[in-house]
Length: 491
Ligand SMILES: *Cc1c(COP(=O)(O)O)cnc(C)c1O
Image (cartoon, rainbow, N blue to C red; front, side, top):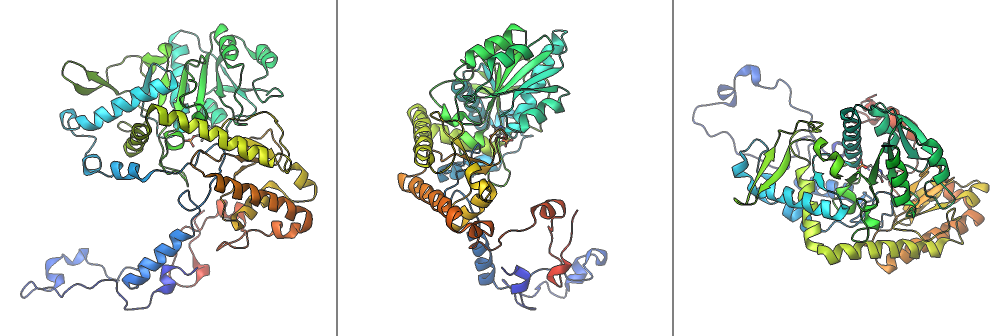
């Protein structure tokens, strides 16, 4: 594909302005000479029509939830209702400023107060802070509260227990807070191995970090027992809420005995988040951690029906980011919850789980199913059979692009060899699920009959394979005038 500079020709313009009509003046009379450019800026010289076509064509090269099926496990890439964008774009939301007086932003405060209340209800927790800007940031906030809690009790602890199936952000978070990460193995059903946990628990353990349902898409039936065991040594338990889509309206981390959790608003409650953002990772806590929540906290004065911010909380861990949270993502989540309501949210998890189990049952004979139990909202296949003939999970993922399907998550969780982690979400039709199943079966057939077609895939995308390590280490992020090979290398 040509860059917009390649398309351009000297002298072409997308607009024209009339000559300066201030009587007797030249532009150089009006602007101090030291502020005038000596050379014109390097801009593409194109017509308006060329601009429109160029960017429309670029946008069509995207693989996104608005164009294709996107079963990226763990990421909950559901369709994003456009009403959310309309509401988040209202002037009353986009034209306010965080420095405005509380009295002038009562609507925004009310929205945040209500959203936090709903999330607390959904998660079964006492209180929610909307501040963290992503799931991983919620983890950092939650773990920082756990650390403060132990320090406050004069009881500094050194270890955090994390299952071998965990998302990479979990051990990273614990390590950032200075904890030693201790791995607990999974049992044959993918849950926490209770006897291994028993051996690991002692007075040095600050917390356990769990995802339930876990990254294999399996609900840990021992969860209440696990949390009781953790509490019995004075440790706390953290729920990574990234998989909440599976249990919305059915069960609540607070009721399972967790002390703190985060919500990935950009997963469970829609919001486009391909390519890394923006997100929001509110954190919810039970009784014991409430005093440690970040400031400010939004409260309501019931008698005046007014909302205000509280900063004076002596045990608070402080601020986790500027201001109050990623506000427009909060508006979208609010809108999503409000439009679905209690019954709608309940249906989300019903259909998400049904869709995942449908696809799983259709593919179980074609690929290896390492944990052969009914799944929640996602499941993990292994391409180990295919690897024996030299085709890897990454080749299968690339080939799916030729079927116009976004690949699933691959090589995660780490405990499954050649993992393909599939999360269809509730927003896909039966026809879409069937064509995904068809594509993966077709690919399995190609593995037998014509494996080369897989190793060289994708064949239909604007760029095929490139050196991923080189692209990560030496990305070319800027176009420089002249030949293509003069592109700026930014290390
Ligand atoms: C997505 C995810 C995270 C991290 O959340 P971000 O919002 O991407 O920072 C943590 N744990 C699990 C299981 C996830 O799927």
